Structures are given as structure tokens and as C-alpha cells.
Image (cartoon, rainbow, N blue to C red; front, side):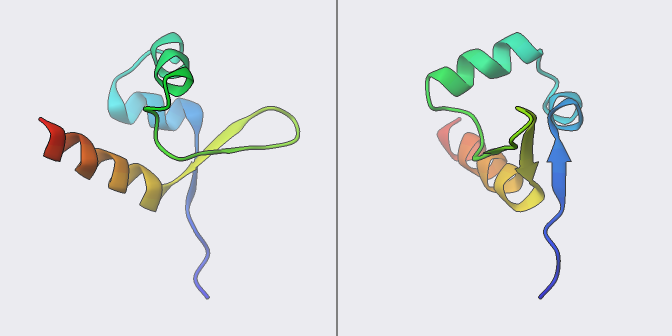
Length: 61
């Protein structure tokens, strides 16, 4: 089974060109990409989930 590429939040924010505050607002509204919160509070987003979120955003536009 191939390992999933998990991205750190700063990597995702750079890729989608968004501030941390904007991401957390979007997350609070349930519009952020699917993500996992680690026990230390850090957020990870899989490459597949980010790509699926991008595709969904393009469809909505």
C-alpha cells in the first residue's frame, strides 16, 4: 500500500495562496479541504484531499 503524502498547513497555504486566518475562517464554515488534526494541534492535509478540494472549487466557479 503506497503511503499518502501528507502536507503541512504552511505548504498548503503557499500552494493555495491563502493566509492562515483566511484558512481558519474557511475551516470554521466547513469549506476547507478535508484535514487531520494531530495530537499536538498541527494540521495535515493529504495531497489527494487537497486535489479533490481544488477540483470541487473549479466546478463551483
